[in-house]
Image (cartoon, rainbow over all chains, first blue to last red; front, top):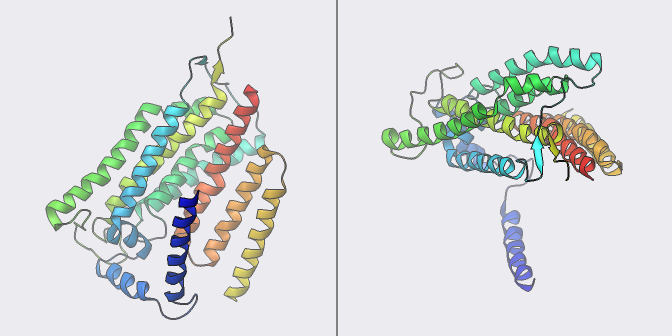
Length: 240
Length: 79
């Protein structure tokens, strides 16, 4: 406890020194902006946030998606059926209002298209791989909201999506290693820059965005499948 | 004008956060948590951060409330 107070006090003192030296909020002096935006435009990336995520600081995104991979694996291990439980067939349909069912069916197609658009246009429009992947996974679960849990399980078989998540993470690492081969640094920008604002621009940022999109969508589907299976399918064994 | 929009969004966040804390039943807190997520998304869009807003919408308004609700129901069913 004493060690924590000493360490925490030193960190707090250093943070205060740093905050006093930073530019004021809402002012006109932005040193990070003066460096980040010209670098993004130089590589032909219209979405500067995606340029920072996948191009200038790609190693941070690599760490974050590895964290996501690890945590989904951890949840899958924790929520598997225990010794005194078994897994049975879930209910055929849920009790939902007709209006909810109609809304879920209508919004599902729109959500999938919006998710694909956000992932593919990661270098141009706001969003990128992570946001589009989450939208795609949430769109698939509108089947569950509409009361069709068995249909959801048929559309998202777990082995396929577990393999998809691993493939997405491996593709990101593979593009990073290809960066070493071609550009001399891990996750260096490989492909030609293209025209600013078009679909094929910003070098390898769209490819990295697609890899992260696949990984996040499949990972989120696996994550929610564990929770849904615990609630709907896993029952304790009858004692005796 | 933009300051007015940001001020309105911050007030909505304040109201939604208070509503989450004042909800007694954890299953119903999942729903108010979802409302808080949507209101935070509006705040981030008002502060000109659409990427953050998209992330917040997907995770904080859809996935986390669903996980919370499923976990609470499972714990209550086995009690």
